[in-house]
Image (cartoon, rainbow, N blue to C red; front, side, top):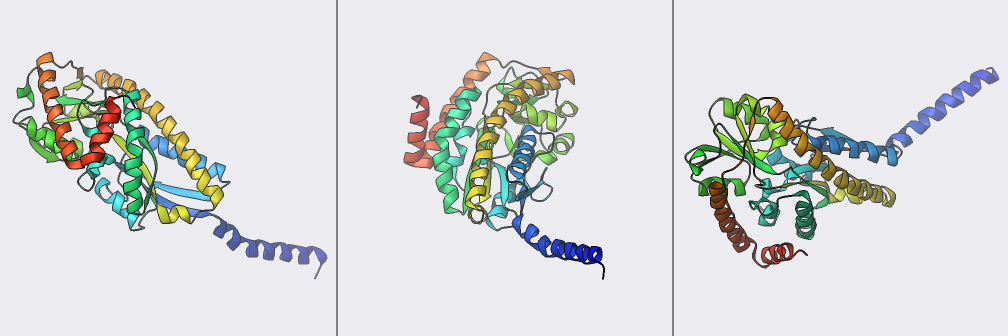
Length: 328
């Protein structure tokens, strides 16, 4: 056998021997998120995962399943706990039935700008982290949604526009709000929203301008009224077991890139609010203004809901709201 032939065989053997070691060096994980690729939350996550793979020199590879394609919103958290996927993203308030502390940002009219939303988020984080830890999860970062507004087919100049309607809800807090305004709460996930309006399952909703763009709200509603109703947050989290299986170096990379994703996510949220409202107007929706008398009634409902939330959360909830209101 020639020297060249022996060298070629040796190189091939070396490559074959090395391949399993290369495969073992790469950690492949799965992540489920509920929103479509065009949503700024999903775009932010894709950028985070790309940065994480690049910074780890390919050691960490996370496959993203967007738009509820693998697990829908109600199943994502348990899916991570049970190991179906290793990472997930949820709207915190959607899970407040199991933990009312997740609902702090869903109290109507508690925050009205991104600075306040982020300050509330920082105060809320220790409570979320402690509860996640007990469930085998680890919080990586949170990002607020743009301020929610009302989607109706008539200007919001009276509470009668909401009263008696089938009101789309997505969380216990929006269920309670619908009940207090005299509407019928109807749970509908984002992926089913356009069809629900088209078939009359729901008639009005309160959610962000971004969700309106995601679901082509101009096809089913005429008026969007920004109100600063809520600025709820999404939480991105990971299985604690999967995190602890990573090297110390890769754990540090996950934390560092997650912090960058939070900063970038808030920047995208602000951009999204401006762009989404402009897009709704461009597609023919009226961008309304809420009547002062209606806002006064809504603020009374907010006070009721804040008091009810403190009753459910006890001392933790009281401390959190007190710290927020005092500017801590």
